[in-house]
Image 1 (cartoon, one colour):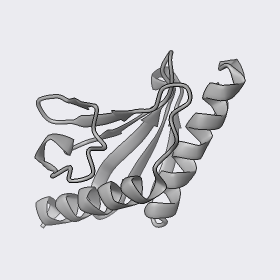
Image 2 (cartoon, one colour):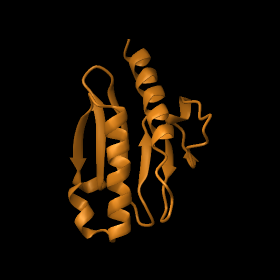
Image 3 (spheres, one colour):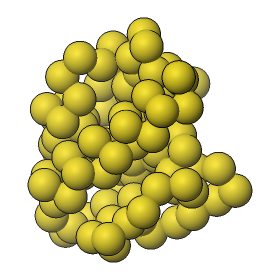
Length: 116
């Protein structure tokens, strides 16, 4: 992520670990860096935008496009909005790769059903 150069080192490491976790869980995704958002987005040609890793002051977050419609049995989400949901990873938080992989899989499945 190009914007990581301006982040504190711990934040850059955490954001990159989060990006890698999402990328591993969604290997067919197209990753795109969005400078104005300070984010890397993950999309697929067939299902569209699924999620994004955002660098925020205090730690990175992963937002799920249709997260409000997703079950969260692992308690990953820290915020839910009208349509989206987010998981925040403040300093010292371990990146739960398995939980992220499961949520990415649920999100891709939901997007594929919606895409028809």
